[in-house]
Image (cartoon, rainbow over all chains, first blue to last red; front, side, top):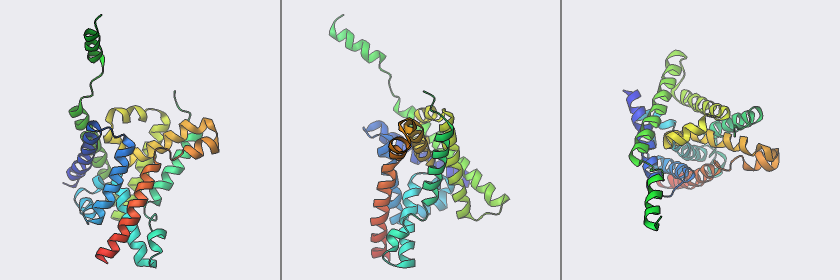
Length: 116
Length: 145
């Protein structure tokens, strides 16, 4: 059942993003930014953890998960070291995604040339 | 040719974006990414005995690797333009934007090209993610303690 839910959650988010894009003048850059903020907002209202519980990886593969991770890492940072933790803790969880994207992108840019 | 006739002809040859088809494709492709992600996560948990959070982290790295690699090989651009939101809304879109920017601007040099344009496309995601995460987490501590 979790497999079906994962399909449903990821599919519906992408569906929403596509409908938004086709009916407005927003670019993919706008859409991804909106969905990151949406992830943080959903996390603020306690909904994103429920979404992950329901849809499993279907919720964590989305870019909205980035916003969710930033939000929860900020909260955890505060509980660990106090006010400074909002800043020092904020990127701890999303570091994995950013650093691996940087490493792979750099290595592949060295090894491969663009086709056109 | 009269003006109206010409405009009619232009309208005929302008490619029509089928909105419903786009949305259905985005739903199916995005859903497939989520489904495959869940398969990977389940395999990692059941076969390798990973904890849930750890498996999600590995999935994130795997997705970024695959999207970066496919972008480097040159066919991912085509896929993204066909599948649209189905591929740019998942983490694959983030990896794709960073890798394609790195490859495209490398010709302008490592500092002035690759370096300064690296986050050209992904920068807004990081900026608005950090802004919203920072202020909302402060609000969250105020509201929920």
